[in-house]
Image (tube, rainbow, N blue to C red; front, side, top):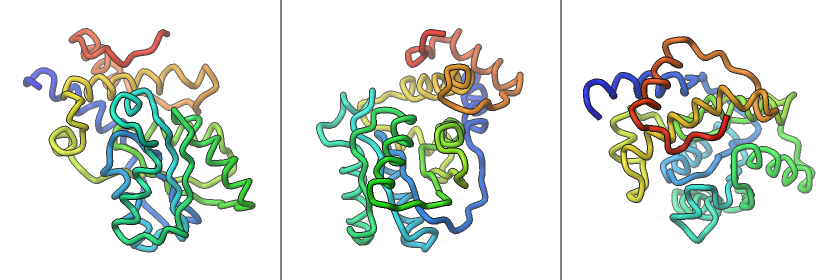
Length: 219
């Protein structure tokens, strides 16, 4: 990133994070992806006693289907078990391919197990906190939800968390695409509406104009 692009990306990065104050919950729900550090964050929260149940949700999404043959949730669960989480405290939902399916298929899995957690800590990538929250509140109203992610800076994330197959430009384009979804998805019934400040949207438009547009969807 040059000196013109960096502050634009940082603006979106900060907007996407909700900075929720954690409190004890009934379940930790990890929304899986290419970022294995998200699995570690979920496992750490469980081991620190924030909830008695750890759920991993994710099959193979639009990015990971090009990277892995194993469902995201299965891989993430192995990471958690390797960190000391008891296998019997883990539930796996490994068929979802997007954030909406993460929520809906987890909801179905818990109903099949006759489990009804009332409060959740959702764990996600830093730049997907806001969209995960908005999706959860739309598709599972009536539940209490907090969202968290690995506590890293933008530079740390780009240096350590991205899959080797994804370039810095790829990650920036994904961050840009997620902001577009925050704006468009409420009218499609996928999320609750979230206010986007003018300065954040101006940064988005500048990044799209600069060519970070490979993860945009059709308006």
